[in-house]
Length: 261
Image (cartoon, rainbow, N blue to C red; front, side, top):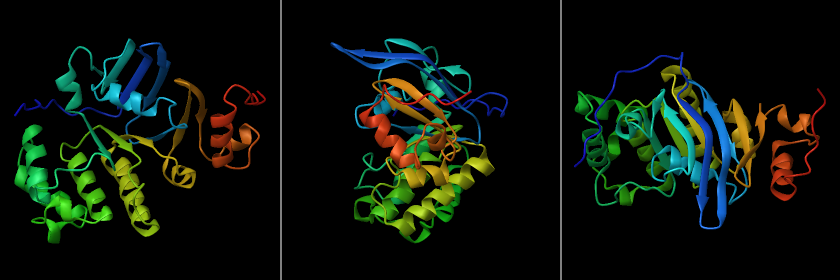
């Protein structure tokens, strides 16, 4: 097992994530076109856009799964191209499609990822996360037997095992009922506020985005088309709701009205 060597924690003075001029070309296709943005510590930023806009490519480049054609990614000011392992000790990821190994129990999964990140006092950290996400009674249950809500809580516990400065969440509540989704959203907001974790959140649920995100970025055809407060951005661009703005970006990305200065 390859272990990730931990680095000292950092302060709010530098962003959790800085993306500069990120470009990704596939054969005959430009998936990302000079994308630039940042996520501050304690901030939740929504990465929005229709399917094919470049959201998943952006996340995969940030995680080092894909190599960019151009541009830079820095996590806590650590350039991922120069020090990938160090940078990734400061980040983690959760998504409904990235399920934990189903043949391992909740506790075994947390222990596995804790060992991967070389977490000090791992047993104590596991107990803390089991309590935080109401998983104590499921600690010895195989993850493949958990409900959707329980699997989401276990995946978030895994994603916090290393106390990340940057947390990437790809549709984290997509499979949850409204009650469970509300609980998860509240916990993630508390995480950003109390732990000063920067969070990049993708979702197609615009009501959720408005309830959770401090700022949103609209991607279209691999470019950042719009950026701003999810509660005021619709009015600035002549729509009544964030969902209407999303639909307009998806259907007419080049004809959005420019707001008055």
